Image (cartoon, rainbow, N blue to C red; front, top):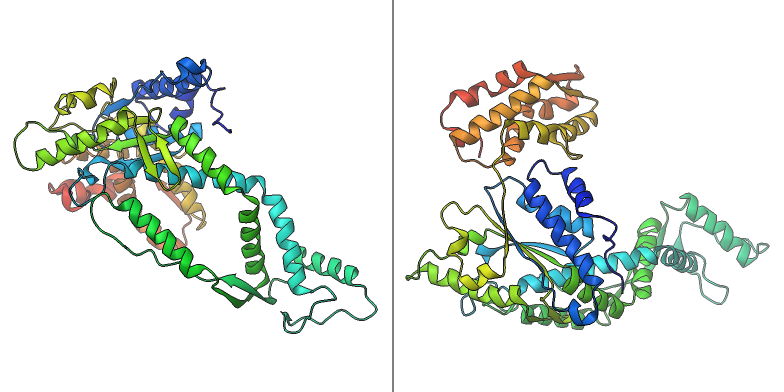
Length: 457
């Protein structure tokens, strides 16, 4: 059984990897690094103790745009673990119309199956490509016992003096060199799958609906094949996909995906503060408490029925997050609080943090815009004082309106460079320097208007 290979990363290295994309928030990085390393440690315990070690679920507390989601997503990518981000406010308790909390586990297993299928597909890619090429050559140049009439349009049949094998190899070289890219071939393809339409509505019916949709789709697609004429590259890609599917053992894929979900899955539950009940009164708080009660067995460890079989949630890592501006973590029901023993507070971002976010990470905003404009031949350059001014502007707007953290930089950068982005294909001056004066000029109208929300949200 293949396991994500993150054992060679010690917690310090995990923090360093996360810091390549996320500025600051070292406490949160340390907590998730420890959680990830504990999974590696658990895999090396004796069987009698292995199942007793429960994951230490985490609650991240902090305003929007400070890196809560990004830390979790990067952690999952680093561990090659199935990951899903859900919003607690989208779920309803059993008995109400809406999604039930168990659907997050079903979605997580779907993600794991797609992940493992892609990995298995990569391992058989070379063999699938060879088989697809052979099938395409059979269509282009049928064996002597087959009737070639109408199979390959626009290509003369080999001369009688050429042997079939020689002609096939010559055609193979033409195919690989791209000489047949404009030629057409007729082949049988499967009918289109059933449109993704709702079958049943109502709370708790997602799994039944998915099963019925799959059953109806299989019934409608069964036996539905039609001849279709297409270009050679398109036919080769389609045949490649079909051969890869034949080579992949889906039973093994599902088995491995379920195992990986149960032992390495990460569920990020955002906006958990939105379902915190501040009292036991009436109204929507009752529904919020109901969602917490439904969520409790999933986080504690239970078995969820999915279309791939039963999935245990005992060792799935749950990371919850919320701003907790109004509610507090203590407003969650006590049982749920107990299942999130680790709490870490993420700090609001200041000017220095914004400067680092603009320049340091591998996916830094300044690097992104420089690369984007370079595709148009524009030499975009950010000066140090220009970056300082962008960061200072973000801080001022966050202070005077809603604080949306790092996301403020996205809106400011778009407004700052909207003229360049629009005129780039027609610009004769190919060098653009963004300095403090440029930023102040472009943002003057915005900063002079007190109603910031009309311009930047």
